[in-house]
Amino acid sequence: MNGIINLKKEAGMTSHDAVFKLRKILGQKKIGHGGTLDPDVTGVLPIALGKATRVLEYMTDSGKVYEGQITLGYSTTTEDASGEIVSETPISQEQLTQEEVDQTMATFLGEITQVPPMYSAVKVNGRKLYEYARTGQTVERPQRQVTIKEFTRTSPLTFDKGLCRFDFRVACGKGTYVRTLAVNLGEKLGLASHMSVLKRTASAGLVLEDALTLEDIANRVVKEDFSFFLPLEYGVLDLPRVDLNQEQKTEISFGRFIKLDSQEPLLAAFYGDAVQAILERRGHLYKPRKVLV
Image (cartoon, rainbow, N blue to C red; front, side, top):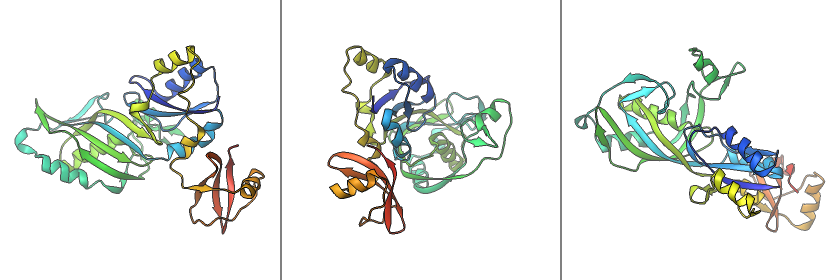
């Protein structure tokens, strides 16, 4: 089996759990996912099978879109609703306007610096941060540069029992922690905050409206309906495309350099409708990084 699946991950499972269950449903060992989702986060989880696992890194690098809810008034250990409360700043309707929230959200657009949360899988000194966090340890965390293309409020502010909640939408690049974005927004507003709800609505060219749950997939497999498999080409949608002639196609099949009129560092090389290879620029020429046929 080769191809890509647009999986709708449900709450309460890790991305690894989803892959494990798909291996059993499909009877396929070579499966991977593109872009980890926290257990409480739902939505699009790109899955690659067989040869398509070779393009997973390009799916992970692609832009993503999330929709969720931010709660102002208290922060948690995990920066989301699953953690324990660590700080409280009760807020009333008189203290905050929608305009203030919108203006502050706009300051996050572009390239920003984030510090990964302690409850994350980022490794420091060979151990994942959440392993330190579970034993009450805090370590210095590496900063990372991430890109925020959109960060907007999508509902009115609602106030209740010292809390303020509103829905939001964010379009961002690789490595962005949306829960950290929610916390940083609160900090700029002078309030404790956390991300209370989140779902990923788009990733690697896949959208939530077309995604299938594990149950959906299992039901189709029983009927031997594999029409939900997407071609490997979906995994390279975010790479610049170049179309090869027959001679160039033959050359790259042997791993040879070819000359192309491009300055892009990476290219998805097509012959007809089929992707042939990922090419990387070496000086004035291009060499196959991965031959996919």
